[in-house]
Image (cartoon, rainbow, N blue to C red; front, top):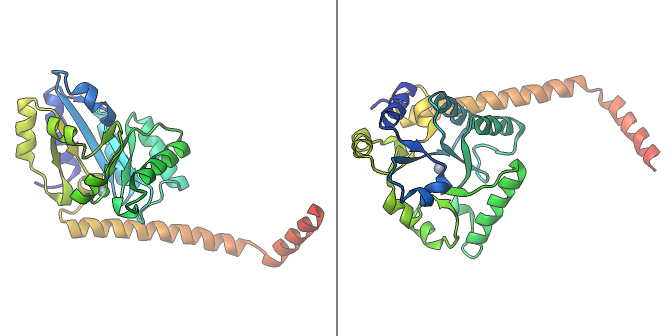
Length: 251
Ligand SMILES: [Zn+2]
């Protein structure tokens, strides 16, 4: 299967054709006893926010609400930067839900649960949101055994994994036939989609990641160009004098 926008739209259309309800991740428990067809559509955002926005727009056009999980403590993007803030707010305005994507290797063993709570609070406070859900980045069995939080949704909750059939596109492996079977049988589904795989042009992991790298280089060039232009426009001697003058006034 080619990983591109058209095929992602086909996946969404397949699910919609069977009248599935797309729910907020934290609602899974409430909905697990309902006889309706339920799907949690989840996006873990690993490298770049713009791919997330592309997917958010596509889904919005199809009247679909999904769950976006963002990292706050990784190297790839800064969720608190002005540009990220704009994108995240756009995603929210399109009607989607937001949760925290967590890299568990960042937390020490003793404060593991405390730090998850701390980061959820910090993220929620900044965006004035109640964060009810979190998912794991690079999960291992070892991580799950350390979780001791009674949270509305976390991606590897044992009961959730029992009651909802989990299927993902991790490492660009996606079993379309399995999804097709689950949807036709009307099973409850927990679907993880990484926007990056579907919204970049090539069809190999390496070249897709290279696209991301080139995009990052472009962004950095732009940021530094703006900074250099600013430096050129400043008369340092004049600014220093002004600064010293105001400093004196403050005394
Ligand atoms: Zn991840």
